[in-house]
Image (cartoon, rainbow, N blue to C red; front, side, top):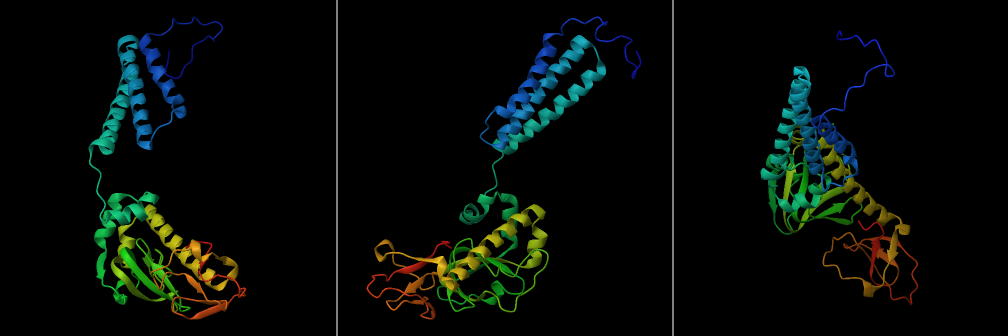
Length: 309
């Protein structure tokens, strides 16, 4: 029979061969296990890949032994032996990387666990990002130098709190993990805005900040990591814009009883304060708008945005 020729009979006239050996049955059994593996709940993707490689290696092993011992077919034996070796190598690599090799320890672990770990940012890329940045230690009540965030730089608070003076005169606190100068930044280009949302930054409590020039981030992060980093910037910018919206639209704020509120120790916490005459004032004492409040009410607490920025 030639390589591309078919036998001269069909399934109704052919002579059926006897059932194959147990080796052939075992090889196909492991393939069957692979197919039904979709119904197995694995604790992580690593376990799923290990299961895949083990089952494929066992199937290739039994097919190889069957081809050598029963079929006596060198090409069938060779192909299945190649599959066996490949899956065995991949299995060893998976086990070594997943369980034996000690995972890299992130620099500034609290920052990583707070901001980067929830979006599965790779630890090696994160460590490379930290090494490429410039770390600043800022003292209490100090005005943040423009060198930290100007000229296309973007900065991130590692610890402490930074108070940002917004364009409308109110304040917004940037805490651990928050970015400075993020509203005018993207990976394609840096275009400084004439009137940024935050006009000045000052230190509320001793802080550690890391900053990166635009060119450094572009050269350090590949496309997948750029997408994750941009997601962080966009999320915080949305929070800041929601905060500004809550200052301008009274429908976005709600009153709470003074007994249910804890006093705020910061004058720049982003909260609004209400006087008896219904005048909304900010921490700096600048009136922003009026509310009609019953004079007999006991509302003297904070007005908090529903967005909980």
